[in-house]
Image: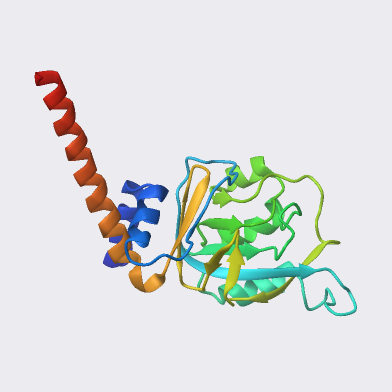
Length: 214
């Protein structure tokens, strides 16, 4: 792992989603965060640059499954460069439909991805947890969703839960929330978030001492 990647990961492990969202807000005012996410392992950090997949309403005539299917579109997204990346899946208006499950997500493990962020649902939460992936989505589903939505394209800008995600932007998710960090600002944002956290912790400790001494 490159030195800069290690530094980014250490910073990501030490900050919260709210802290990063505040740090982005100090640079510009675009909407960057999402809440009310579900995860089979909410204590598992999801952090890395995004590769994207978009889903459209299923239509065998317009989107024949021999061409438009999870395996082929996923391979286009990864292109042998999956190590440490986050698969971001945009449902494009179908938040209650399953975009995949344990079997499909096992491809992420094989390509070295660290996890997935989806604005649809996923199946097989227990299996996803066993994969060791960091998984964040709109909730668990039990029904296959292939008759509702179909993967159509990879590595194009997408909108997930109202947030723009461009390939290469960084995803940070913990607990039930996530934030998208522009790739050119990720080190600056994480460093600012950590410095602000440390400063606020020092202020809180000083205030507590003054109350105890008072």
